[in-house]
Length: 101
Image 1: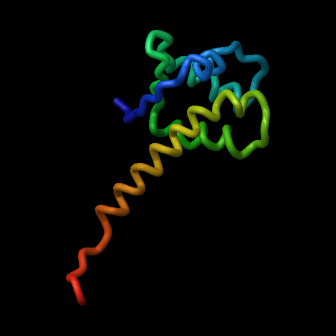
Image 2: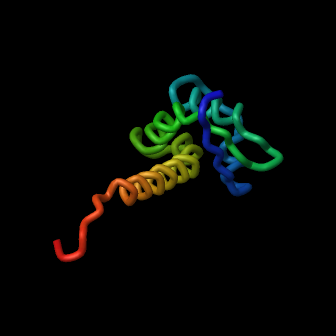
């Protein structure tokens, strides 16, 4: 099984994510995958780690609009998760020095 993360959305964010998709393209493909991974009972979206980069990219790199707004809450959670992991890794890999050395 591939590693995944789950993100819980508030009701408004979940409703925005689940709106019908119109058209075809990269944004629509990302939204469709997210919708297929969404659990309406918990408002959680279970995202494969391999999908995190495309979600953030589509939410932040292509200007403003309706699709970006639908992806932004998830992208913000993904970025916060990555920042948290990087902070932990940085603390663990910091060299240990003797006092006064």
